[in-house]
Image 1 (cartoon, helix red, strand yellow):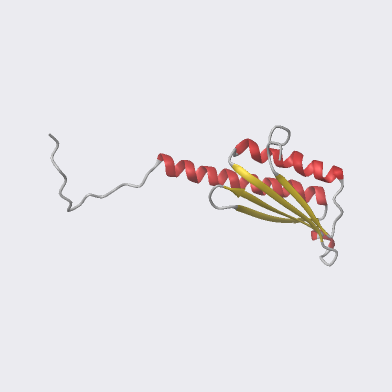
Image 2 (cartoon, helix red, strand yellow; image 1 turned 45 degrees about the vertical axis):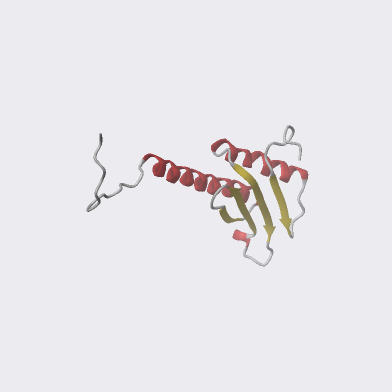
Amino acid sequence: MNKANNPHEIIVSGIHLELTAGLKAHVREKMERLFRHEGHIVRLKVELECDAKHDHAHKFIAKGHVVIHGPDINATVEADECYKAIDLLVDKLDQGLRKRHGLHKDKRNHPHAVEFDGVALPKAI
């Protein structure tokens, strides 16, 4: 992959759904929002599924998988329109990345206290 032309790896696949160029462009455009928050994202995988057996309100399913250093982030949303499902998926992944960033920030700024009860410490010279 040429990093100069495409700095982020976004994999889009369709299940029982024909992916058009417009649909792929919409996914890539919306997913760029995630890279603003977290620069250490290795890969984004997006699966769009059209399930005719579901009821009409949950016909389209969008699944997202963010490969990042540490635990990966997964999300799944259902909607009646494909573009709406993509928007909801981006919101959910964005929320997960913000939560993860907040947890790491708290851990970095508030380290756990260490107890030295009953331990003989050396005297300072």
